[in-house]
Image 1 (cartoon, rainbow, N blue to C red):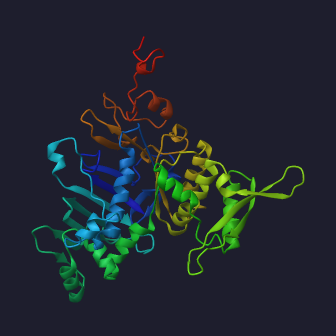
Image 2 (image 1 turned 135 degrees about the vertical axis):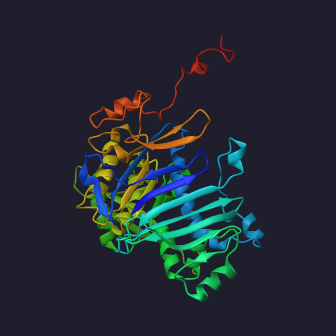
Image 3 (image 1 turned 180 degrees about the vertical axis):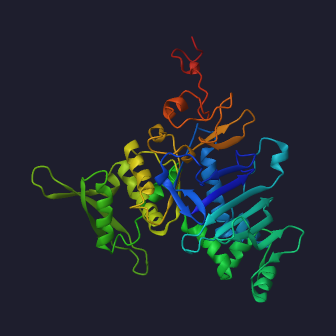
Amino acid sequence: MLIQFNFKNYKSFRDEATLDLSATKITEHESHVVDIANDKLLKVAAIYGANASGKSNVYDAFAYMTYYVDESFKFGDEDERRRKSADGYVKTTPFLFDEKSRNEETMFEVFYVDNTENTGKTYQYGFSLKDNEVIEEWLYSKAKTARNKYKTIFYRKKGEELEMNGFSKNHVENIKVSLNKESLIVSLGAKLRITKLKKVRDWFLNNEIVNFGDPAENLFLSNALPEGFIEKKEVQDNIIDYFASFDEAIQDFEIEELPVENADDQRREYKIGSLHKMADSGKLASIPLKQESCGTLKMFALYPSLKEALDCGATLFIDELNARLHPLLVRNIILTFLSPEINTQNAQLIFTTHDIWQFSNELLRRDEIWMVNKNNEGASELYSLVEFKDEEGNKVRRDEALAKNYLTGNYGAIPALKPMKMLKGGNADGK
């Protein structure tokens, strides 16, 4: 489980931001809290904010950290061809609106418990980048019984001797020989099949990161088929049951393999139809799955990530969860993660949203509601409702009308609106 995610000097976030999944000592919805590794952790975090406030940049920061952990073993000083190609690495973007930040490092860090280990060990892993170079990288661990004392697994800093503990001499030498300034030790170590480093890399890869705010990714996800969908009837039946949780119209699927022009082509394409019961005869009629509503297609696209996260106890991070979905359907997804009967592996759901229906003390704890506000200097700030204080130093009470107070600007993180006088009807010259 993710305990905490920290990042600094990334896109609209100039100063260090912290998304903390540790439960505070408030008393509402105590069933939402999971006891693990001597920590009390939360399974849901909802991130609100105005358009252009930077809330999607929280998602982007976590996605970028995951990308760099996974891909950086490929990056190298000598590989100019790859760097210039379309599949070359994506550079990190610091805060660009002051000269100091433009020339400083960008930092990413996570604290987490690996659900697959069942040891209660906590890990702290992070790195900082500047000008396409790893300036610093660190990995520490803490046993469940060690209270607050972390042990160094490795520590790396530009210009200093590499520190690695508990590795074989051969592994250390392989890392030193192969490591370049653009690659992470965790990424390279996973490629070299060093178990303790591969496990860190795999923790990132086991998480699900989905961006429904990106039209291209949204289209790709809507057209991707869940694993085993074609050949396994049980997978199809499970998706029918999944659809029935919000719409019982789809009764089954019809799958037709399309002919291939080239016999040597190993790719297979399929025509997927959804079967609906006809009102007059009770027979089943097929329509192309692509002609289903946008909401149904989004739920179809969400299914693999929801299933994988809940099966594996992973962290599912979604940008724009509410897009094209009814608020009650969004609420049902949240309740699924909050349910100890369904979410038996302690999977986590972190999502950005504008859905005011979920901004409720009937559904969420105050430490599960997060907001992003952009200050007068154009820098984004991330804070939870439980830590927010008004100008007089008053905290948010558990019995407040949260949604109403949020919309009236009591907690920040809303747009500052002005009349759209430029749209006044009339001639082009305003007459």
